[in-house]
Image 1 (cartoon, helix red, strand yellow):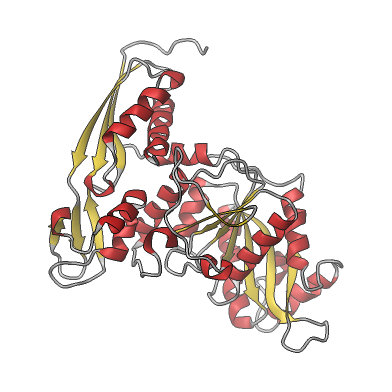
Image 2 (image 1 turned 90 degrees about the horizontal axis):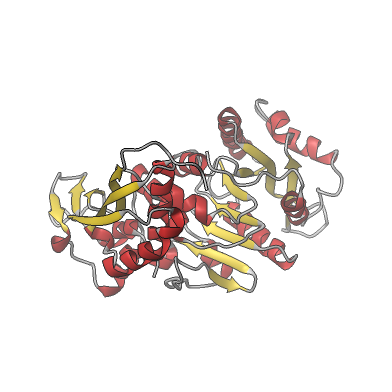
Length: 257
Length: 138
């Protein structure tokens, strides 16, 4: 038996310049928020942006976008929703709503393949993929079908989150997957607004210095690295970082294995 | 008409597999679960095949019955026994077969932990190639 979807995926992603997988080691670090906010910011800057929620068991991009996705329209495939002008969006919630869809590994990989094979994204500067937390079937399958995708790893500054993020970064490094950077989310803002959270961004390479540090040193290192990169440390740094990434001439293009 | 995207994937996949050799026949398997509209699919293939150099290929379809297998109690059951699939749910499963995991439960024990053991979606069962050397690229 030949699975025709790999060929279909290559066709559907042919117009996508960059696949950016927003991933994390632990859940609850604000990965979906970064994916959604980042997508909106890029769309506002005039880039053609797609957002794909691949966190099948924790789909939340639609909640963050404030929409209740229905079935997509059909035109030689499934057309992404457009919950916000300029943002194309696809999610499993279009098909299952808020019901749990308990799936084992092979079904997760099948769902990912099916959605990518039939969704007509058209020409995109960047397809932001909200990944499930951790390293499992979705991570491995995306690496197989989109080997040039880059990962933006989200963590908080806690040792717990950074230790696991470091594990993910190590896996991505061993797999030869490009890492766009490490975001320390929910960092103290430093702008004197009580309760405000900020994003700090370590561009590619910063994570290498983050791991394999031990204990509390892990927390300090991304910040230390970050301070050397002025302009990316203020709140809103995610926007600038993503924009730089999406416009970078060194951006990897999507390619089939 | 998301069948078009499935047809496009099949045609492109066959074109790649053939590697320039003439394709005489393609045998497809349609999983019962996905309920692909064969008429729309055939019309899309008829539109797409000539451009992919598959104008000589005859596409045939066999439908594979859907079978679910419960991981908790071991029961196996057919699509006809799958309660919880109304019109909207079938439409969702048509678009994304894995949506079945949100609607179907084991009729024996009620578990959500099951596999779609057979008859899921579209696959290519066989490609019949002409017995000749690859022609020159156009």
